[in-house]
Length: 386
Image 1: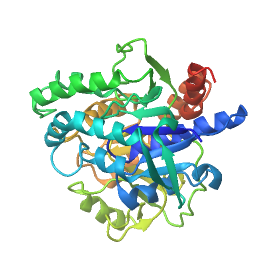
Image 2: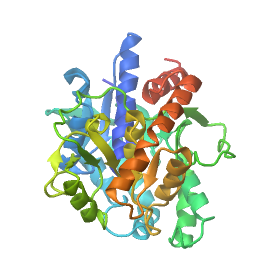
Image 3: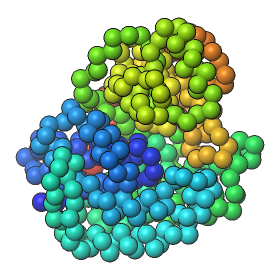
């Protein structure tokens, strides 16, 4: 068996989206009478990552899921340079300082034989020379062991370059580190044969923006349309995909006063909440979706036609969130929470639903589909002449 390697940035969205694209490629390969690829995913976040992936890809068959393999060694290496505990400045310093060491160690591992753990259980021995394709999402390392294709919402080096143009009141990061990170990101991005930029994306607020280079191609939303059965929601409520945001306690209290339930897929983070898979966001009894302004949360809200409510950007946080917020507000995909009451938020978001439907309709007319994964999978295989 040949394998596909996922190479991504920090957070849940990047590994989920590269895996979703890999599954779409396998579906397309099967449809053409070709053998599917084993999908190697660095195992960065332990059992939490496995649980989230099983939840996200539950609608895929056991046969398809059995081709997904988790690699704890690659995951531990990437975690060393990922944004996690600590400040974003600190993560930039780790990344720019340790990039070469981590990349060299990953290449050494991938050029030998090693054992992986299947997402569904079981183990598989792999030979590095069997890696036939690399899929990336804002990668932090350049591996170049196989043809590489990136699917992103905004390239990392463009995010950092644009961040340098923003005042320190809005993006408060060490300019020297950001400049160094922009140069490194550009070098890493050069490893991709083509870059597919999902619309909407990080810079969709800028109507004057043009493609960075000839590698860039616009594609439909990178949001999974193949999802599991919507959970049974018995009581009206709100859905939360973010925790640890100061002030949310007040919203939770207002939720109780309005007789609403707080649903989430992480009940440990929100005491008193009720568990439900993210597909609950599209349920008619869900009044509002509160999530961090990353494209996993934004895209799911968009495809479910439920406006997202997001906390404002912290100037010391990932600058991508700053630009994402500009796009969400300018396109009318959601609302930024700046102290509004829950009742106000529900009233405001209800007025945006028609706007989102119109936006999705325009995207479908432009691309012929809203399935960015299937669309991009076909383009990648065409590029590879498969």
